[in-house]
Image (cartoon, rainbow over all chains, first blue to last red; front, side, top):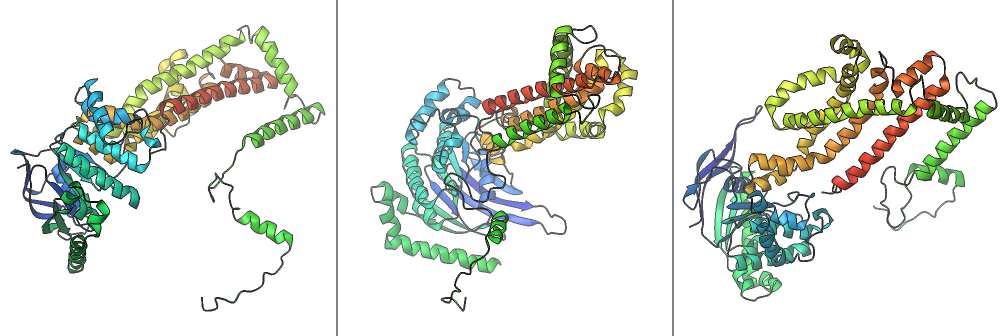
Length: 261
Length: 293
């Protein structure tokens, strides 16, 4: 058992003539080791708030976030975050960006050894000395993922990591993340607003609904395993099972939206 | 849309109207340029031409005797005066000493302002306590012209070097401190959050994320600051100075030696410009990533 969220609520205090906003309402979620949990929902459903809670950037108004028996009370290297963009440090080259987390912990020259392993794993070999601002969006995201992995987190948090990529690069990146998830055995919590991405990548899907933000539905998903067992990504995504579930999830999201509005 | 399919035959227009219309909208760009970017294009040749034009006009007007040398000496007279002062010195002091002392005053004040202003500005950006304390005094004195508080400086610190350097220091300090303070805001929140999620301490986030990302703004503030320093130089050398370019300009003006005044102005401009070039070079070296992410 890796992560446990117990009855967590987040209420933003009332502001200038507005009532308090309940961004998250009584969230209960258990993430087991090696899970790939995907949070899906329209904007405003509180999925980013949920990630901020787990990362420790935000403390719950009530309830608890417990990681391996210890209550989360702030950010830490056991929960590295990959952001959509703007998170790399442009004054460092690829290698220094990837080694950044370990160097913060005083690992010194040894951090480069670890960094090089993940540079290799993410297919960035040959770009070690490149300035990150000269890379394409897809490669920048790979640097961001490599950098988070070098910290060897218990939980890898991904906040719409592929949201800024073009559609084709995005599909490649999905496959790459799944392969890396398999080879590193990490526990992943990923946010997306793409239904296809959510279904394809997760082992578990939580569909969130807005006003107040809550987990409305949960699904166990077989598709990433099918892909990792050798099926082609497009074949998985085009299978009848996938399409049926995709339409069902879309229907749920749209009807939740209408209810809440 | 209801009348699609029907097109009027193009009517010939006079060329003049087409030309005017061309001025009003951008032309399609050549490959490698972007359509519609305001102020696109290289200006080097035009700038050189402008300088040459001004020099030529200056030379023509003065040589033809249209303006008296008292008001505007000819360019060649300035060059002669420059060579004259270069070899003979001014008021018994060699030229290089005038230049050196002024440069030392400006750069001494500049260095001091950076050493104190940058850390203070960063601290103001990062701590509401520091901001609360130092914001009022800086914002109070910043818009006041240095000439207005020059008398105070002299009453408080005498007529020696202290008041001169302090005056220049004050004019550089405010822009540098405020630039550093604003620079603190340059780091993206994602960069800061990412660093914390890798286990960084607050101090490490400041040192490894906020400070480097503030560098472009700090360097810009330094360029602006040194500019203020040079503008204040002449004021600083107004009282009880016996050396310096500012002193040279002021005392020459009292004897109506216009050529020396203009020459002094050119010397200040040349040093300031050379330093600005140096700062731009440093900028390209230190923050090549500026504006790229």
